[in-house]
Amino acid sequence: MNNVRVLTGEEEFLLHQRENFYKEKFAEKYPEAEINEFLKGGSVVNLQTSCSSAGLFAEKKLVMTREFWNAEKWETATKRNFFEQLEQNPDTTLIIIEPKPDKRTKWAKALLKLHVEEFKPLKENDKIAWTVQRANELQIVEINRNTAAYLVQRVGGSLRKIESELQKFEIHGGEITKDLVDELTIANPSAVVWDFTEQVTKKRLHQSLRELRKLERSGESPYMVLSMLQREARIVATLKHCEKQGMSSKEAASAAKLHPFVVQKTMSAVKQFTDAEIINWYESLLEIEHQAKTGGAVVSTDDGSELHLMLEQLLYKLCDK
Image 1 (cartoon, rainbow, N blue to C red):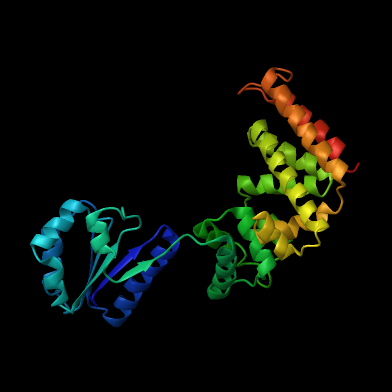
Image 2 (cartoon, rainbow, N blue to C red):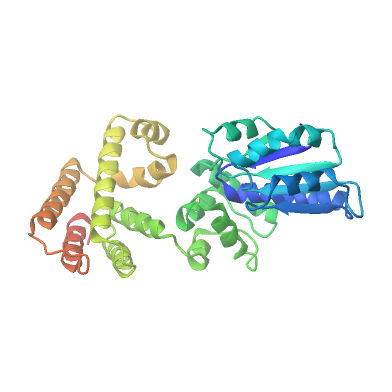
């Protein structure tokens, strides 16, 4: 059906952009035409009436439904020959917005046989490319791919959040730098964790302690910090093995099943660690975990200070003074 579009998918920011695109283009082409919207509580009868009746000031009409459909409504629409009648009325365009229809259901399967535009969550590389492209589209900033990757990692993966942060750079103009990203953006909690593990891997004692205290002040569980250090130790050990095999960063990323950006940021730091230091890192973490679980360190939901102290002591062992 040429006059029906289904917008679906979990990447709601892109879906919303596409919805606005249709609205804006329709309004530009038919400024006197009606745009009607039906939400979850609307009825199929009223929808059908809206789609079949002429507009007050123009023949053309855009009708949109938002999370409107379910099994009962689809059955009603089928009995009333809703889509057959709509196909015979080219003056009306129907946009169906269903971000997450249950694809196991009969009505959703039928819906997704129409003209569908699906907006799937972007993978990290695609988010980085989108960030560069979006900055160019907004015509307010310039950003290179490496800085875009840093911005995505720092503020989190939400496209809405990334766009919001991009708009902060409008008053500065010119090219966005990493220093400017640090100055103007609010770090996602996971980015603070990333900064912490990065500083540990680079053996920077003072920076590692600073980031650890940031995590402590933000209320992050010391068990989470311990878990992240264990993960980082595994990554360092894996990349150390890849380095010995003479692998490139790309080959190491594939072999270790890690994102190339993670490998790129970690590979050079791995050279600073000997096999003995990595083993010591592992053993120290296991000892801290053992003490926390067996009562050697007193840790409660209200007080993780003793575990935090043990983690600080570990940093003194791991990092250069």
